[in-house]
Amino acid sequence: MHTLQTFSATRGRGATLILVLLILLGFCFCLSLCLGSTPLGARTLLAIITGKDTSSQAYRIVRYVRLTRTLASLLSGMALALSGSLLQKSLHNPLAGPSIIGVNAGSGLLTLLAAAFFPRMLALGAFASFLGALMATLLVYALARRSGSTRLTIILAGVAVSSLLGSCTDALLTLRPETQLGRIDFLIGSFAHVTFSQLQLAAPLILLGITCSLFLGKPLAILSLGDEVARSLGLDVRRTRFLSLMLSALLSATVVSMCGLVGFVGLVVPHMVRFLIGEESPLYLLSCTLGGAIMTVGCDLVARMLFSPYELPTGVVLSFLGSPFFLLLLFTRKRRTANA
Image 1 (cartoon, one colour):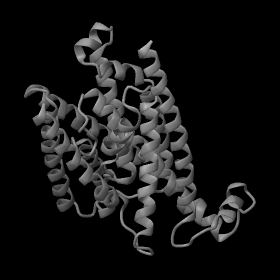
Image 2 (cartoon, helix red, strand yellow):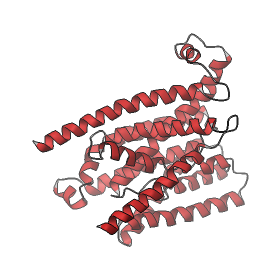
Image 3 (cartoon, one colour):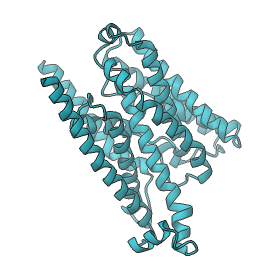
Image 4 (cartoon, helix red, strand yellow):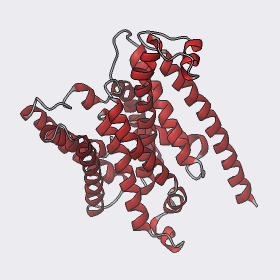
């Protein structure tokens, strides 16, 4: 009876959080379409959305500039937050994230390689990005297992792999400076230069990855109980973990191929959602997805407006938020371990 009450309360908090997140996301989405070097009013935006205005300068700004950028930031946030959630659950490590354990670095390296040698083949770049993310993930996991798969080992292995792959990326940009993607926006992460064709290529992959990931909610909840307990409950641990890593790599790699090395979303958002409703909630993954979208759209707004008319790459704002959060999380966990 107590378990049923707890489950019902958790589900109720999750449903409330989903509603709040949807309202916040809608507000941030509209704000992103309105604000910029040319501010637009609510009435103007409403006329554009309802189709009453299809020829003004405001319509062209929204349709051809801000809508693509806003959708790119929204989908990227969803993908990165969900990717981080999958990594943390499948590796049993709350410090794991695409930008922490080398997933983004592997994806970025192979994306740049594809851009350097096959600059006109966008589809090949997307595949190379996925392959790089998957290789980095599996390499970190293999190194951690070989040296003792503790939570700290996974993070240290990820940092080492990320550093190595980052050095390879720097070497490539030095040897091939004409690489089209070798610009500062790619290395830091920005939505300013995402084109509609890139969005068209990335959106179906992100939506597919999100859909498949949400079906893994129940198996991942069982996996979080520990490998031995999960096996005793009939879960195929290897397959569940491999599918989670594959989907995590697909989501983060698609974002990297579209807008560069956007970091920290996959680390921060899952912890915030875990604090609000707990990771045992059946709505945990969906909440992370919506929370990630709010974070990236909001940070992109800050990057645009903070020093207007000049703007920062969104990755800079995310790093300002994410780096202190990671350090706080690291020292908090270390203090808890020492007290235990």
